Length: 94
Image (tube, rainbow, N blue to C red; front, side):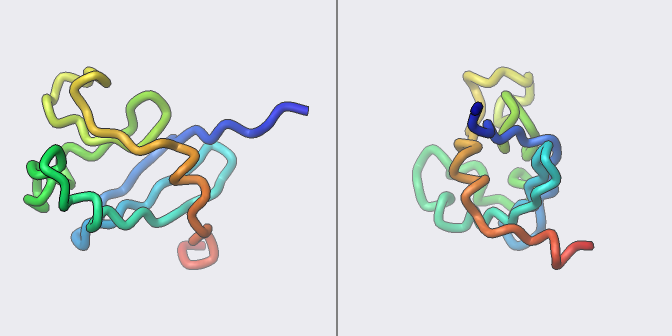
């Protein structure tokens, strides 16, 4: 039997540095990025408008396209397995 590989199909960045993450199997999670923003590499995302404007899906996962050219090597992304392990928030949205 093949294990499920999580594929992110949509992300919605929120004003509180959270991101709603939608998977191809219907699961929805809330990713809290506030702790992530402490690192130097994440400094550009401390501006909420940059956080929201660059938030996207790249390589089937949540990413921030810092360069603006859709180059995965110049983006910040989160492992899709890390995201998928979060509790589902489907019941809060439906």
